[in-house]
Image (cartoon, rainbow, N blue to C red; front, side):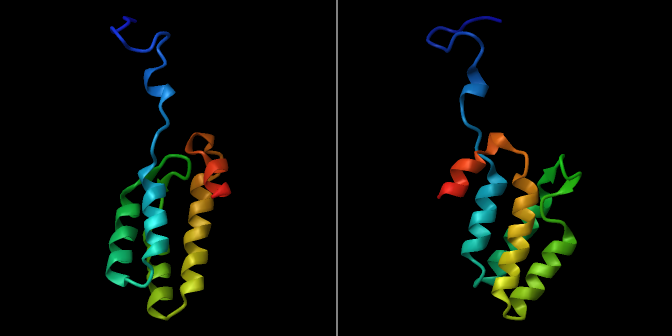
Length: 106
């Protein structure tokens, strides 16, 4: 391992920086835009493209996407939020690197 001038010593580099999880940002955006069905649908599709190796599939699979859209179309916003929350909990479970404690506090 070579030390770059002005760089951190000891090989910390990538590990020293906190990683941003784009899926969590999308979930937050989804929760905020449930009144805009086309936008929510786009976000759900994008979340379906994120692979979760712990779950062994997408973060938001097709079945969950359909259930959430059906709830929104039926005016059941609380049900949609509950479904999103359940998938969020599955995704965030056992992922200390995502800063769950910090997110739960806010």
